[in-house]
Image 1 (spheres, rainbow, N blue to C red):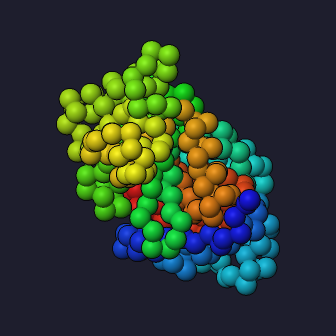
Image 2 (tube, rainbow, N blue to C red):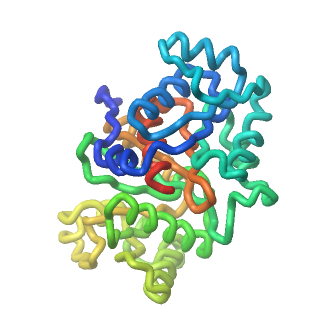
Length: 302
């Protein structure tokens, strides 16, 4: 049942990123081969100029194993994992790097460092996470948000998530994205709180003049399938044509993304946006192509 398909970084995303790169990126606790290998691929793709933070001897050994000469790149020696995140956040705060990339470190440790108020890495906007999903190298992207950062966002937070995702869609060439506010039903029901929030979010988006077609509540089938929408008699600008799927909670988004990865062989490029610098928080199970795509998404998000 699991997909044997090779995950491929999408060419369109790479092209947009290459036009903006290379930019300085700090690789946080880069003490595992996959972190070094994906950084190498990103350098070869002209996306980043890496700054490595972690145990210097391990980083040098891993790069040597890959036959990659990193002598011209900065390595900040810090053998203690939890100390690498504050170093990376400080580099970003001082404008010494433009992107933060998670290496072998827990996400909560990294994000705790990024969220420190005195570093000014966050402004008035709420941070949120977007997944840029593709199945083939020339595939049209499907954006899922927020499946990694905001666990059970309230209405105000969802407005930030919406605005951040629309901005990201603009940056990948979607000038007026179609946004589906996901629920379990297309009807507004008191027994389904996400449907009521979806209705309010749709109204708020219109009132605030967000440059996107936003509609909810929408069930998943009506969001992605014109056939399903036609059968149910659902007619709106989003039905069956969704660019951005705004999910009600982190479990829904995370589950959808992981199913696409493991059952369909999708490439999931994930990045935290809305702050001073994009933050790549890859999963330890992500392969190098997904990590490369995530770094490309981060460059695009600048």
